[in-house]
Amino acid sequence: MGRRVGRRFVLRGAAVFAQAALLAGCAAGPDFQRPAPPAVESYTPEPLAETTAATPIPGGEAQSLVKERDIPGQWWELFHSDALNRLIRQALEANPDLQAAEAALRAARENTLAGEGAYFPSVDAKLGVNRQQANGASAGQGTASSIFTLYNASVGVSYTLDAFGGVRRQVESLSAQEEYQRFQLEGVYLTLAANLVTAAIQEASLRGQVEATRKLVEFQAQQLDIVRRQFEVGSVARTDVLAQQTQLAQTRATLPPLEKQLAQKRNQLAVLVGKFPGEGPGARFELADLKLPQELPLSLPSKLVEQRPDVRAKEALLHKASAEIGVATANMLPQLTLTASYGSAALTSGTLFTGPAVVWGAGASLLQPLFRGGTLLHRKRAAEASFDQAAAEYRGTVLKAFQDVADVLQALERDAEALQAQHEAEQAAAASLELAQKQYQVGSASFLTLLNAERAYQQARIALVQAQAARYADTAALFQALGGGWWNRDDGAAVAARKNSDEEKQP
Image (cartoon, rainbow, N blue to C red):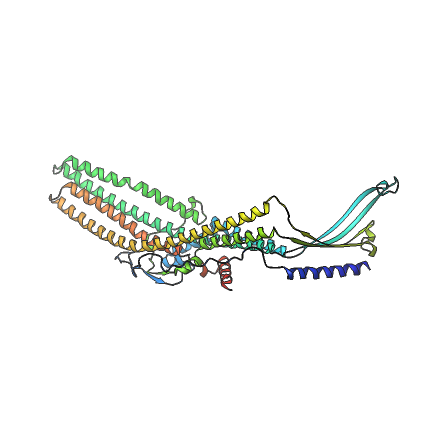
């Protein structure tokens, strides 16, 4: 009889739980709405040139912006450097910052799944045995006492009805935190790739500057030998020898800082790929080994907020702050909890699961906070203030994203013009130096004229290498500023982020 009653009770309890879930009302607090894209039509106040200036040297190709062209997921491959591609593949497998971001995403995902457990009843099994001594006097039965053992086994079910959506808002908050970590991962991925490309370009630039300076040192050393021979035969003064020695020493003094920067850049590359500096990055870069992309994608301004990982991360935090308002609001409203238990209790283990040993119970409780000293109200107000903070931070991130794109677009145009001008300056300086050498050898130009020509050529040559590197670096910066094409990758994090973005767009 007791078992039949228990079974009927369990079935009825399950029906009550199902009805409670169906009757749960709408969630408290605001329903999150994604911010609308900024109503702007261009990145810069003035129209951009359709094609940049061209210079007849490596890295001097004309570049054009192709509006609405999509960004490839592996955008760095557009530089056509096998060494760079290998280096980035190594970094994506071994970089600790990327691995930490991946672990943070996994933790956030597990926290979301853990929070979703609150949608279901809590079911606990309990099995116990207690040795007790009871005093008969406490029950009005004289002073006799007895010692006995009590065995019990039971299953308890508890379910808090989410009538005002507090649990749903809490899960929504956890899901938004997961989304934040997902785009944090995309941000780390993009930053890592961009830093590697930029560091490789800077290494190539420094290597070119070191090479140009060494060639100039060799040239100036040869000039010093010539001046010394001229001094020995009395055709020049000692001041000319000292001046050439000074020029050579000054040029040599510029080498150690360049070599130091080159070594530091190599160390940076090694660390970015997850190696110790002593191991080295395993690749050397020259500007001549890189190909400048000539057609550059340019996303619509309305698309930028969907593509930038930092903007999407801030949007996720805004969503989380919105959900927290709902959690704080639900905590101020009534909470209904249903409980049920079914089990057995007996004085011997042999009779524990017999009919007479069956015990069961059912109950419901309603909790309505009446007075908490203003705690719940102020927590709700704090959640609303946090939402305002998140909204302001989101707007600031969007503005910074548009600034980044505008800065890079204008830099690309100016870089091309600067390279063209530096190439002309280098050609003119080389011609001037050659003419000064000939004139000095025949005595029609002073030694000071030769020194000035040497100094001008040195500066022009190094500036040309720097201008070449700037075009490569700012091209990489454009891909980074536009979001890096994560939506076109096939790895798990990018696919999940893309799926969530598509779901959010659906009504």
